[in-house]
Figure 1 (cartoon, rainbow, N blue to C red):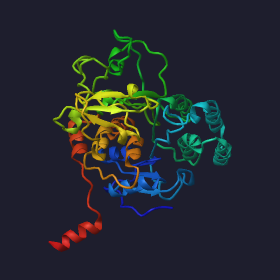
Figure 2: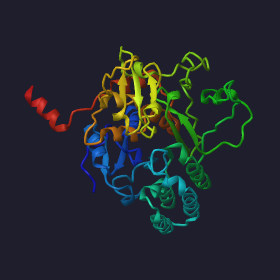
Figure 3: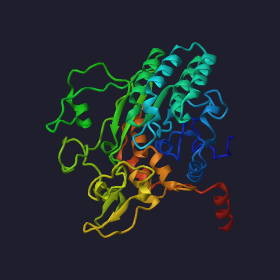
Length: 402
C-alpha cells in the first residue's frame, strides 16, 4: 500500500530512498541538508510520526518494492537501517546465531547474474527463525537489482548495530566488485588508557592496513548527547567518499570532557542537550535482571547511555536519591538529537525513538556519502530550530481566517 503524502519540499529531483525508514532520523537529516528523500516504513506508529513530520513516505513492506517501483525509481542514493532486534544484545540474538548463514547468503547474492537470481536467493532466506534477520539482506538486493537494470545508485548509506559490521563488510566486498568505493580509514595507536579514540584515527596519519569497507562510529563524537555505537557502510561509484571526521571527543567514564584531542569539541551532556538547569541522575534497570544493585546510573553532566525502547522505564532522581519523574518523549528524542518540536505520534513512542538513527549522526554520514561539505554551525542551528510545517489543509484554513 502506498499512502498519500506531501510532495518533496523543493523542486529538486528525489535523491534518496530510505529503506526501513522508521520515524525519520535519516530523513530528517536529509531535510536539514535540503536533500529530498522518501522513506519506506511498514510500522503504523512510525508512519503516523512521519506523516506529522511531513516526511515523504511509502507505507508498506520493503520486500514488496524495489528500485524499479514507481514511487522510488527516481532515487539515486540508497540508504537503509534494517531492523536490529535480532542482532542486538537486548534482542533474541537470532541474527548473531545465524551470522554464518547471513554471510553465505550475501555471497550468494554477490554471485547472482540477474534479477531473477536475486529473487531466488531472497527466497532461500525465508527460513530464519525470526524473519527480521533476513531483512538485513534487502539493501544489497536493491543495490544489485539497480545495477542489473543499468541504473546503479550513485551512493549507498547503511547503518546498524555493531554486531552487523561483518555483514556490512561482506556486502562491501560485493559492492566493490561492481564499482563502488569506500572511505579511507587510517590506523592509529591506542591512547594511554588502551582505548582508540576515533578522533585521533583521522589525525594519526600512520601507515594503515587495507581500508575497511565498513566501520563503527561513536555517536558522542558527532555531537549526539548519547554513547551509542553504529556500524556504518558508505559507498560511492564516482569517487571515494570522505570519512565522516569526528567533531567531538569520545566519552570515557571519569574523564573530563576537556580531556582529549585539542582540535575536537567536548562531548555534549544530557543537561546541556535538554537545556535543564537542575542536576539529575538517570537510573536504569536495563540489563540488570531485576537486581536493584545492578542498575546503571548516569549523571546529567555526562552523555546519556544508549537510548533504547526502554528509555520510558528510566527514572530520574536527585543526587540524594529522590525521584523526580521520567524523560518526556520530547526529551528522549532530544537525546537522540531530534529537534525538541519533533511530532511524535502513534503508540509505543519510546520504541520509535530507540529504533531511530540520531539525525545529527545522519547529517554527518549523508554529507560524507553525498560529497557535501562537512556540516556547519548553521546546519546544526537549522536542526535544533526545526518545526513541522503545517499541512496544506491547515495552511489553507489559516489563510481563510486572515
